[in-house]
Length: 212
Image (cartoon, rainbow, N blue to C red; front, side, top):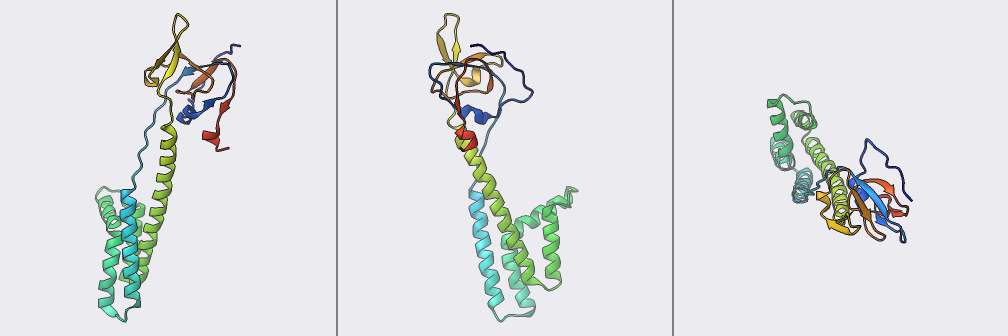
């Protein structure tokens, strides 16, 4: 059974490459379309930020529990403040010189420095620590999502089937398949590249995409 190819302004996501063809005997033909991708996760920076947060939090609690008061207490609070917030202050200064001062780094620097200028040393440090905790959670969540997608991309097939003039299938690198080339996906194989169905009928296992 042969279908009529359809044109779409939006190409399938590269996640489509992980689908498995569960048909029995039926073959599917796909017309190749363009895809791009590339994901890289970074965890070393997250570990470094976590250590900074823990050290700063311990120091803040230690200074808060100490009997020190006055300017000596303020000086001690500066130690955890710069440990956890030096990168925020540096980014804020760079933003000022670049004319992009009204970003989150500048606003956080103003809020914490202003609190300390008013004598609220502990509050200024606490705000910077909690801000870095939020940034750490956000970085972890984004990194986890990227790693999950990257792991999914790793299962993409190493070849695509192209039917030759003699009717025999030839296995080629998916990256070498030109747009508009008709490829054959046999039962049990994964779809190597995205495209539209032009002939055949079967079923696809979409659990990799939907999670169902």
